Image (cartoon, rainbow, N blue to C red; front, side, top):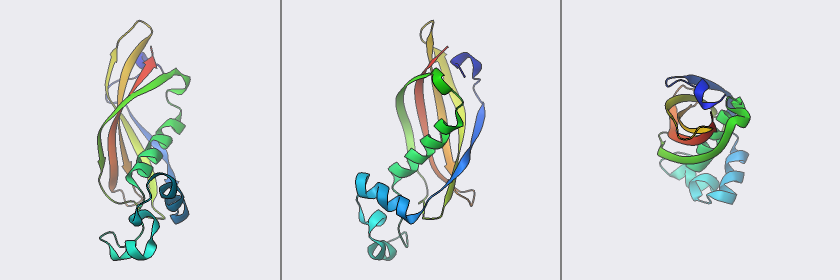
Length: 141
């Protein structure tokens, strides 16, 4: 979809993604090597009572789910920014996540392109919000 086809207030829901402990540990081992993501015994003694996904991993899954919807397809030109990023609840192994994307702003900046802002809200299988963030992109008109 091009910028002019989106309407503020449009809502899109993604498919689900189920995390495994191995997924969490593999991601954290490379990008966020902290004990609560990698050391099961120490994590079990902490406030989360076990291994949890990195917030950056949750953000990445949320973005992946949105992109895989294919709503803007090849009309996207480039990402422009992320704002209001919030990691609301911990994400555990076996959690199944899905994301709801809402168009919260759009504006033309050139004859051929504009800026769209989406709020991504991600939920676990208990319908608890675990993440939210606003993503701005340059998109064809």
